Length: 426
Image (cartoon, rainbow, N blue to C red; front, top):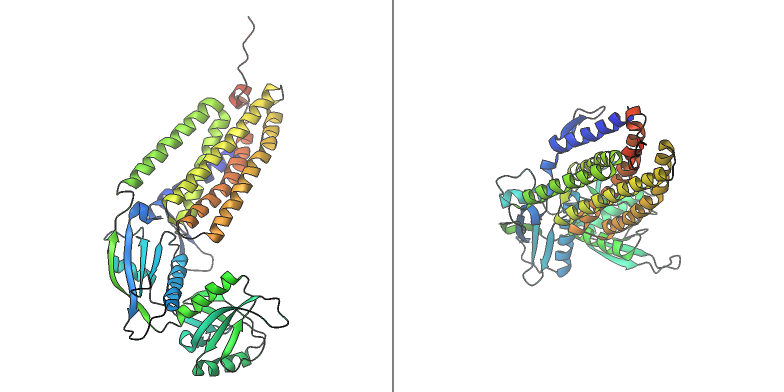
């Protein structure tokens, strides 16, 4: 019975992967949309995209390099929030322009660059809010924000972010901090929380700083985001055009066909060589593939060529895990152990090898996601969930399924698990 339950869960994941689904949320009228693989947003290399050139709008003053860098920072923040991982953002300081390249949405059929740009929205609303959500300060009230090192006697040289406010902003901030001592003032970029410093005392004079940030890199990033909301200009797209996929229009179909053929050949090999454990391995691999695709499609992560490489690598690790387990079971049977003992020892003794390999790759994937961006982040994300699902399906689900099948008398022949067929004496 356990085999059919696990197999049913895998088939359900596969159906959702192919068709999508809408699930109700308790207490809410809206349904959660579980996107199918046809709704995955593919990278520029696979599906093409948009190239847009942004420039300051209706601004006659001097455009500083720091202002352009801050604008780039907010564009990256918005694309991260939209899960647009395959993008290129280049600052042209000689012409005061920002060049942005990003892929089409999966739902786009007309491929209109101007319509696609609406996804990025307007540039860029910075607000300081009290615990009730009321706005106490806006980006226009901030003159400048800079990263710095705290040199006070009570500090150990921790990074901070300094704020210089306008005259009007200083008055607003003094009033707000006087009421909010001991509470947080949250800083939002659009509707994204980027910091929530605690007010230690009323701040007057128009100067303040944010502490307890972490690293100097984080301080630089926060200062750039705050400056982006205090830009003296808005950005507008002065030109846009479509980008053809770098791999060609038919690349996706070729990759799907190649992947399907490779998966069928792997399953055929596992069935012929490992018999019943190979049959279970096919189900485990199917569950792993469906799980990875759902982990990409549901949150609408961008799937790039590097992301596909992460999927392939994790599936290869899944095959390796099942091969190790099947070989361990065969070794136990050849020593004369009973079927149940062979199954238990096979999984137990193979677990350390599989687990060690998964842990090392898991650490590498986490590091890529922390320090990477763009297509590198897509690779790390695919690899991370592939390794997690490899452990779930390749070890846990496989053990449950093969343990369940071994309870049926017709499936207790050791030959089905890799033992040599015993010749009858004549």
